[in-house]
Image (cartoon, rainbow, N blue to C red; front, side):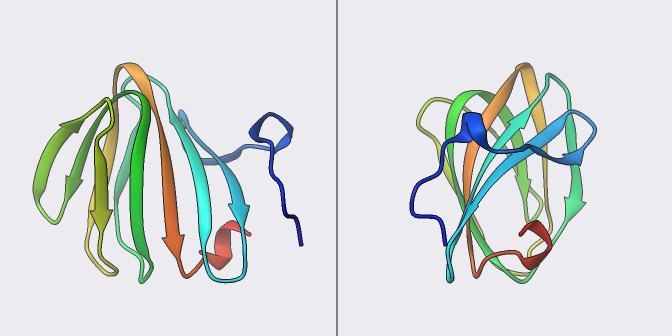
Length: 108
Protein backbone atom coordinates (compact mmCIF):
# COMPACT_ATOMS: atom_id res chain seq x y z
CA UNK A 1 0.00 0.00 0.00
CA UNK A 2 1.27 3.46 -0.89
CA UNK A 3 1.56 6.02 1.90
CA UNK A 4 2.51 8.96 -0.32
CA UNK A 5 1.18 10.03 -3.71
CA UNK A 6 2.57 12.57 -6.17
CA UNK A 7 0.04 13.61 -8.85
CA UNK A 8 2.90 14.42 -11.23
CA UNK A 9 3.95 10.76 -11.04
CA UNK A 10 0.42 9.33 -11.29
CA UNK A 11 -1.01 8.14 -14.60
CA UNK A 12 -4.19 10.04 -15.47
CA UNK A 13 -7.33 7.99 -16.05
CA UNK A 14 -9.66 9.32 -18.78
CA UNK A 15 -13.21 9.60 -17.39
CA UNK A 16 -14.80 11.35 -20.40
CA UNK A 17 -13.50 13.38 -23.36
CA UNK A 18 -11.47 16.23 -21.83
CA UNK A 19 -11.84 14.86 -18.29
CA UNK A 20 -9.02 13.07 -16.47
CA UNK A 21 -8.47 11.89 -12.91
CA UNK A 22 -5.39 11.01 -10.90
CA UNK A 23 -6.38 8.53 -8.20
CA UNK A 24 -4.99 7.88 -4.71
CA UNK A 25 -6.75 5.22 -2.68
CA UNK A 26 -6.64 3.66 0.74
CA UNK A 27 -8.76 0.85 2.08
CA UNK A 28 -11.81 2.93 3.04
CA UNK A 29 -11.48 6.20 1.14
CA UNK A 30 -10.28 7.49 -2.20
CA UNK A 31 -9.11 10.86 -3.52
CA UNK A 32 -9.36 11.80 -7.17
CA UNK A 33 -7.74 14.92 -8.62
CA UNK A 34 -10.03 15.66 -11.56
CA UNK A 35 -9.11 18.00 -14.42
CA UNK A 36 -11.75 19.23 -16.87
CA UNK A 37 -10.85 21.02 -20.09
CA UNK A 38 -12.93 24.10 -20.95
CA UNK A 39 -16.46 22.91 -21.78
CA UNK A 40 -15.67 19.25 -21.05
CA UNK A 41 -18.67 17.33 -19.73
CA UNK A 42 -19.04 14.59 -17.16
CA UNK A 43 -22.42 13.14 -18.20
CA UNK A 44 -25.20 12.61 -15.69
CA UNK A 45 -24.51 9.50 -13.65
CA UNK A 46 -24.86 8.11 -10.14
CA UNK A 47 -23.02 5.63 -7.95
CA UNK A 48 -23.57 4.18 -4.48
CA UNK A 49 -20.51 5.97 -3.06
CA UNK A 50 -20.65 9.23 -1.14
CA UNK A 51 -18.65 11.92 -2.93
CA UNK A 52 -17.35 15.20 -1.56
CA UNK A 53 -15.21 17.66 -3.43
CA UNK A 54 -13.24 20.86 -3.23
CA UNK A 55 -12.45 23.27 -6.06
CA UNK A 56 -8.70 23.60 -6.66
CA UNK A 57 -8.84 26.02 -9.61
CA UNK A 58 -11.05 27.32 -12.40
CA UNK A 59 -14.82 27.12 -12.56
CA UNK A 60 -17.16 24.17 -12.76
CA UNK A 61 -20.88 24.00 -13.49
CA UNK A 62 -22.10 21.20 -11.23
CA UNK A 63 -25.61 19.71 -11.13
CA UNK A 64 -26.52 17.53 -8.15
CA UNK A 65 -30.01 16.10 -7.82
CA UNK A 66 -31.41 18.65 -10.26
CA UNK A 67 -29.80 21.71 -8.61
CA UNK A 68 -27.11 23.50 -10.65
CA UNK A 69 -24.42 25.83 -9.31
CA UNK A 70 -21.25 27.37 -10.74
CA UNK A 71 -18.41 26.52 -8.37
CA UNK A 72 -15.04 28.27 -8.01
CA UNK A 73 -12.59 29.47 -5.38
CA UNK A 74 -12.87 27.44 -2.18
CA UNK A 75 -16.31 26.01 -2.98
CA UNK A 76 -17.06 22.48 -1.79
CA UNK A 77 -19.81 20.03 -2.73
CA UNK A 78 -21.42 16.81 -1.49
CA UNK A 79 -23.11 14.11 -3.57
CA UNK A 80 -25.00 11.48 -1.56
CA UNK A 81 -24.83 7.91 -2.85
CA UNK A 82 -27.37 7.18 -5.58
CA UNK A 83 -28.04 10.84 -6.48
CA UNK A 84 -27.69 11.76 -10.20
CA UNK A 85 -25.06 14.41 -10.90
CA UNK A 86 -23.15 15.94 -13.81
CA UNK A 87 -20.42 18.54 -14.35
CA UNK A 88 -19.11 20.86 -17.05
CA UNK A 89 -15.75 22.65 -17.11
CA UNK A 90 -15.93 26.43 -17.15
CA UNK A 91 -14.37 28.69 -19.83
CA UNK A 92 -10.87 28.23 -18.38
CA UNK A 93 -11.40 24.62 -17.35
CA UNK A 94 -11.37 23.33 -13.79
CA UNK A 95 -9.49 21.20 -11.30
CA UNK A 96 -11.33 19.64 -8.35
CA UNK A 97 -10.33 17.22 -5.63
CA UNK A 98 -12.98 14.53 -5.07
CA UNK A 99 -13.17 12.15 -2.12
CA UNK A 100 -15.12 8.90 -2.34
CA UNK A 101 -16.23 6.56 0.41
CA UNK A 102 -16.02 3.70 0.03
CA UNK A 103 -13.42 3.73 -2.79
CA UNK A 104 -14.73 3.19 -6.31
CA UNK A 105 -13.43 -0.24 -7.25
CA UNK A 106 -13.63 0.52 -10.98
CA UNK A 107 -11.08 3.33 -10.47
CA UNK A 108 -8.48 1.21 -8.68
